[in-house]
Length: 109
Image (cartoon, rainbow, N blue to C red; front, top):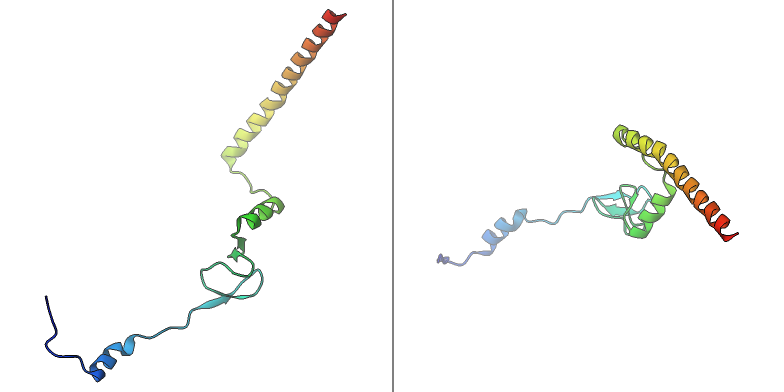
């Protein structure tokens, strides 16, 4: 194991540590509330990051108020096909239920 032969002097120690400095952290202003915030961190005052809420309660509230995103072309085609089929299926089921109710009423009389 390597062991130093002599003790390091104060000036040599100081010269070595001359580049070891504390730096002032970079700060920005929160776009939501305007408070000073460390960069790349969540605002401690309002709980947002890059204008988006980070807290679960805030996310739910923002999702409820925000409009839905546009769907891609593939999903719109699929959704259109499903929505076209659903009313037909629902109408057929409704007619079957009405027919069964009518039969039950006739049998009761």
